[in-house]
Length: 411
Image (cartoon, rainbow, N blue to C red; front, side, top):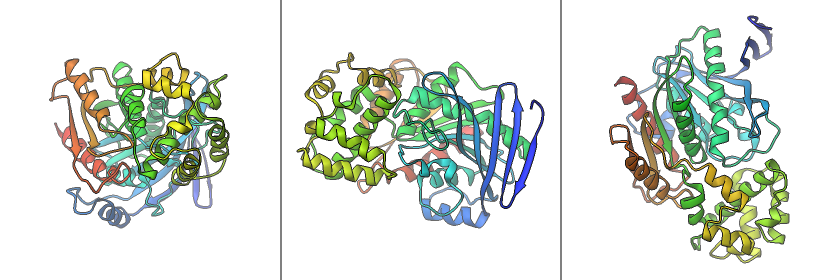
């Protein structure tokens, strides 16, 4: 199949197959956003921001491509490619999405309908400004049948890196110009994945791509330290407790499914451990799953802390940072908070974030400074808006990232 392209048009979609010795591409057109739709949604999402109006419609593609799983075995993954019809003279943005469980919400499922998802928000924020946007589904989401290895940034960053060349192949096949400039961004879990992406690309660049700037946003860069410690804090807010129980449950469930020999009973009390698979085997959104876990947590006594849902062994391991525990050890190996970037970087966070606490960004910036990265390379932007939370601060963060990329691409 080398050097050949097969086209098959049926009804409203198109498949295209290209091949190289090291790459497989299968893409399907899934939707189009008109210039009017892009500008209408940009205004709705970002209000009176300084983002200029779009001048091109945006074509959406579901792309399938080769990558590797956390055990190094070959897999075919899926993702979204948002390509301005008039081209992307500003470059390509590799965007790593926030935590999701329901594969129906994966980026590759976005078809342009006004669904108010963070996938739509990121696509609009960057594609409206003359950028092509690559969004991997990640391992265990989209078309990959496994369980997502949450929240392992060193593993999941490859899902995006391996998607860049196939998407450029799609653009070339459509005779659409995309500048060689490459930008990296991500929010929440995707913020940590984006940080790992930059670190990985600095060590092994993608030929034909110029890594220009990065904007990791509200990411858990220190998962075994700052992030784990934040889960131990007392709170009377049931939604915060529900979110913490969801994230801990997702980690435990994912680790059990991806690493032989790990049992949920090592981490959660018996009643809670047996309930976690019941929740994750249903087709639920994050909000629905978190609500169920919140109610279960109340039943087992988590009135102001997740403590009563966890085994004494795991709680003590978290408190003492006992890295003989396999889950904590894996989290430590996926920390990305102590290195020296050379790529221009803006780290964005919310000052009152209770889900991914801003200490993640503060500590990482301090470490980077100590490692010799000056303010001309890396800096932070703290959003001070008390009416925002971890979820609602993503749109203001996207505006800041877009403005940073616009400026960085010109310098």
